[in-house]
Image (spheres, rainbow, N blue to C red):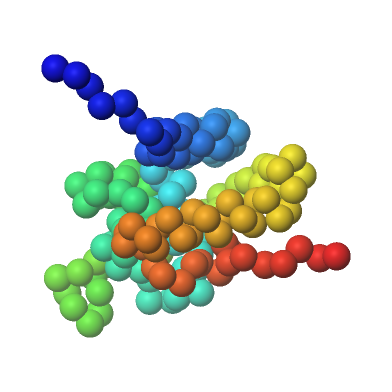
Length: 164
């Protein structure tokens, strides 16, 4: 049976490869702080919502951290045990749970943000500010095109013109 050759490169594989390349620089810092990739994704989400004193519903955390419910449950259990997060029932709906980062969790977010931002600055220096912003913009467009994300890009990835 003849095979039909692919015309386009394997985009999902390229995206995974790019993710692993970036995470290859981030993982050592995560490990120094005793965090797994999944725990970091949860802390990053909670850090981005730290201003919300009511906490973040676990369903939203799962969506924004790209974790399936059963995996999130285990991750949150370990994080609560380690004092990184606290959980409580949602005051408006006792069937739901909300989580927030503790002071220790937020301290880890703060500490890790320095090395992660330094890596992004290095990437910007290698690629150029415009190219990195274009990459963010293209990824936002792809996400919106495929319907798996917001149509409005996140504040941190909005295309901004480079300073002259």
